[in-house]
Length: 163
Picture 1 (cartoon, rainbow, N blue to C red):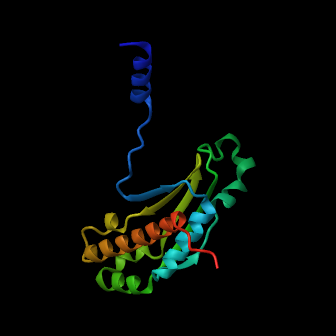
Picture 2 (picture 1 turned 90 degrees about the vertical axis):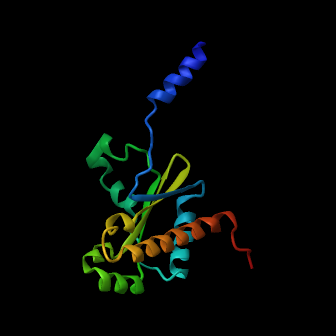
Picture 3 (picture 1 turned 135 degrees about the vertical axis):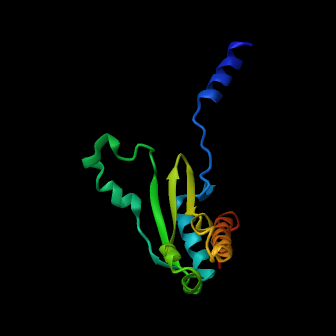
């Protein structure tokens, strides 16, 4: 085996694997953070998931940069934003089936920018309530939120025509 082949093999074996987290839905796009954020926000609202809070987590963390020094933003994230949202219908249905699952309310999606890519992450409700009376409802909820995110991300590839 030549040196180049050994080098490639060494890099592949020693590179840390980034396995998906089973409890997290993850999407990525080259589109900038703010555009992705706005498109997902609009898609959630169109799908009756109403955004109730919009924390700019990256800005809040930046306030601690001096205090944390070298420990601040070691992954070089270009921003962190979250959408905290709720569907009154789903909240009511969850409360009817298993009030303990109101711990999911409100739901949230987090977006972060790293290395020229915007990442979108969402904790899977089905992982929390898979063994409850609400399991089927949570599958529907998760699918509806995922569809809203995917529609928002699709809007980046096919923007609405200008007036």
